[in-house]
Image 1 (tube, one colour):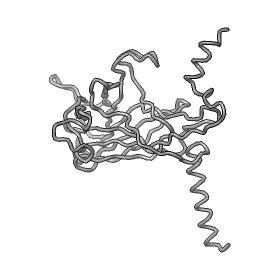
Image 2: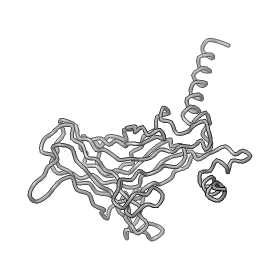
Image 3: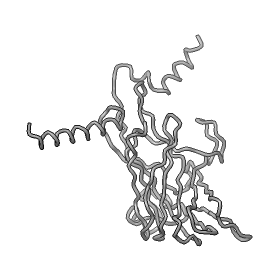
Image 4: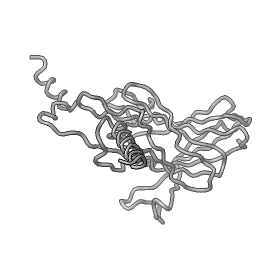
Length: 259
């Protein structure tokens, strides 16, 4: 094999190994897009969204920043609605953030979910911080974001099954209007383990909006819509794979474990 051909072969082999290692030694089989949060705030909504600012957040007698609200807005590239409803008749909304700081610098606003109601699965009460569980092995995280062409940027904080929180840059906000921001999940973030069940999905903890030191920080607005993931939900099938399902294990041992 010639030197040039050998080099190309090695590069292809390394790419394949990298792709496989990111998904726990299994190649991606069935990528699909899953919407984690619509921000429509209807009766089916699981979360409220809260905001918290850094040290120099503006506070006056009339208003305290940052502020958040569900507003009647959406990206027309995603929904071509004229009556404020999607194809299923659901009301369309976006999550609006209004911020301001007393001085320029590395200021930030955290945007994080809390439970709307008591959660039986986690035991958390309404109003407690929530973490949105992704499905499968997340390859990409995306969200539609409306910007005022300010020199800001957005991060997403994701927790792995070991409890480690990873910071992933979702994108810069130097543009006007709606844009879909997409970030690749690094292959170094573990999402599988060698024992079954192997899938150990990420959890979305919060988003953090940063201002850059030279950018203005007078009252500004940012809007979020349609948080989604591109994910691989493939899991190997083998004889007795149902016995690795936590729900099956709980059912079996609740019935038989005490005997």
